[in-house]
Length: 131
Image 1 (spheres, rainbow, N blue to C red):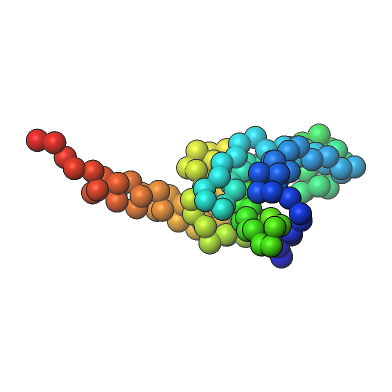
Image 2 (cartoon, rainbow, N blue to C red; image 1 turned 45 degrees about the vertical axis):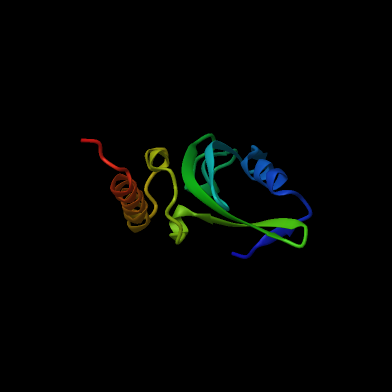
């Protein structure tokens, strides 16, 4: 997938990416989102309005973890949409999001957990202990 740019601010782009969407086939909503630098993480719930959307029956829902890379250029802001099934090479996804969506890439999830463990270890080493 490529990058999608438009004349809007970063905040406007983020609001657009997390707002509910609806089409003839499905509706989707961001049930959780957080920003880590220029990476927008969200958990998205998709509900099928007709059978066949994401292999769902009409009225069924599923959730997935989405990763939008954000970038500004020449007064425009753009995003590159990715999701867990694509194994994005970004691992700052909040750990609690892993419990909110079915596994689509166990290898990616292992790296997310390792990323957070490394951060905890570095913070613990940097914190002076009191005796």
